[in-house]
Amino acid sequence: MATILITGGTGLVGKAVTQLLISKGFDVIVLTRKQATTGKEQYSEAHWDPDKGVIDVAAVQKADCIINLAGAGVADKRWSKKRKQEIIDSRVRGGELLVKTLREEKNKVKLLINPSGIGYYGDDIKRPRGKQAFIETDAADDEFLGKTCQLWEASVDPVQEMPGKRLVKFRIGVALSKEGGALTEFLKPVKFGVAAILGSGKQVISWIHIDDLARLFLYAIENEKIQGVYNAVASQPITNKNFVLKLAEKVKGRFYIPFYVPSFVLKLVVGGLSIEVLKSATVSNSKISHEGFQFLYPTIEPALNDLTKKH
Image (cartoon, rainbow, N blue to C red; front, side, top):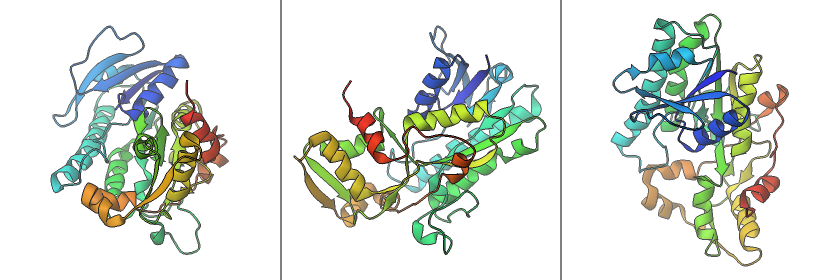
């Protein structure tokens, strides 16, 4: 079975992808900045440190595919100037180190999957005239996240020129998971009977169920025709208001109170990150759908049914 090398394998998306690949019989190696440990039952670890230009070359040489998920959490801290640079550097340096290693060291890697995010596109008001949703050929936004995604993707572009190698870029929407991330934050007030609608609530969320996201990575590995950029979002985006109300209904039935959180309050609490929270981004998944990928959760109803059910 093929060997998959994963950076960022301990993050929300990384864990889901790792578990799926292991369940399908793949050998998984997780690159970690910490000292690699032995004795992992399901996967092995290897060391890397992009800041120092250090990587376990032997691990790369074992790999048939690399999935590069490493990067500082965009929503983990307020966006100070220092934090913004950390977010960029943690992505670009990792991509550049992987490219350098693939170029200089003998290897059998056939595929690099390097996701970024739909923050690449910016707000809906910047959509090309006449388009109902952003598509993969639209230009990058000139704000912070757009520039970050553009730099991250550009860091691995040289792979396209390497013989026998494919490059796949998934621009990921808001990933919904019971294990953390955005859904966990939305659930916090809901558990107390409050449906917290952010700003006007009219902003559009382009989301994806974590299971579908993990399946997209597997699909790219198993289908050699998959190459280039694809939006990783569900078929039907939803407004913040409708999402929050549906979530509250699933969890609390009729026993909840809708509450609008004013924009200025969000700005006080999370600073510049509020721009992203309040941004409307309608993104199309037509390209990957036309390639034959079938979503288990194309709409929010079945997704929330799964994510809110008790086990």
